[in-house]
Image (tube, rainbow, N blue to C red; front, side, top):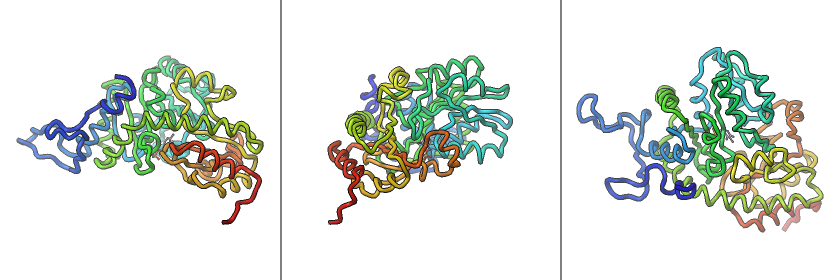
Length: 384
Ligand SMILES: *Cc1c(COP(=O)(O)O)cnc(C)c1O
C-alpha cells in the first residue's frame, strides 16, 4: 500500500459489526467481562480503548513500526518514552529541541536523576563526543524549530547501534508522510500529533511508534502505568486528521515554495531558513532522508521592532504558538516559543530577535503572498 492509500485504508477501518465506514467513538471507561478474568480484548480504557487502538494501529502502519501508542499530548508521549530509562541513565539530545522537551529534561526528569546532554546532532562527531558510559539513547528532532536544522538519521542510527543504545526521533515537523525514521534505523518515533497529524488546531495529542515487540511491551506497560492516554473523542479527531494528511502536506508544500520564492526576492528579508533551498546547510541530507521539505519557514527581518511591525500588519497569518494547521500561523520565536531560553544562548543558536517563523497553511498562496507583501513593506498600516 502506498503512503496516500495507507492514510485512508491503513490500520483499522470502520466497524465490522455495523458496517460504519468511520471507526466509532467508543466513549467508555470499562467493559463487561463474560466471566471473571475473561474479557473480549478490552478491560479498562486506560489499558486499551477501541477508538484509541484504531489510531495506534494506523500510526504504526504509517511509520512502518511494530506498535503505536497515543498519549494526551506530545509531552505526555515524550515523558512516557523517557520512563523507559532509569535513574542514573543518560540521554543525548539535539540542542535546539522543542522548548517543552528542553524543559522536561532539564527541569523535571533531572529531579529523578535522568541525565542529559544537549548537543548539535547535525554533527555526528559532536554526538559521539557526548556519549558516556551510562548513555542509553540519542534523541533527535529533525528538522528543528525554528532554524530547520537537519540531523542525519541514518548516521545517528549507526552511532546508536555501535554503542548498543536507542535512537529516538521526534518526527513532528516532517510527519510520516515525508519521513519514516524507523526505516532509516531509528528505534522509536514520536509525534506531537497536535501539529500536522491533527492538522486543524483543535486537538492536543501525542503519538509514539516503536520497532520491536520488546519495546512495544515495555511502552504499553508504561502507558498503562503512567496513564497519560488520549481520550476516544480526540483519538477519533486525530484519525480524521490523518485521512487528509497527504493532501494537506502536498498543498502546504506547494504554498511554501511560492512563499519562499517571494521572500527570496524581498529587500527587507536578510536570511531565510528552509531545507528546500539549495543554500540551506541541510538541503542535501534532507533530500536523502525525506520526500518533502514541509511547510515551516523562518526568516529574518533584522530587528525585534521590525518583526513586531510585520506581525501587526498581517491579515491571514494568525499570531500563535503551534504549527502544522490548515490555517497559516506566524510567531516570533525569541519572544514566544523560545523566550525561556537565555538571550545569550538564543544568540548562539542563531535565534535572533528579528527572526519570524511561519507555518504555512492551505489558503490560496496568492492571498498569503499579498499579505506578506503588505506586512513587509515599509509603509505604515492604512486605516480604513
Ligand atoms: C509541539 C511539539 C511538541 C510537544 O507536543 P504537545 O502536543 O504540545 O505536547 C514536541 N515536539 C515538537 C517538535 C513540537 O513541535
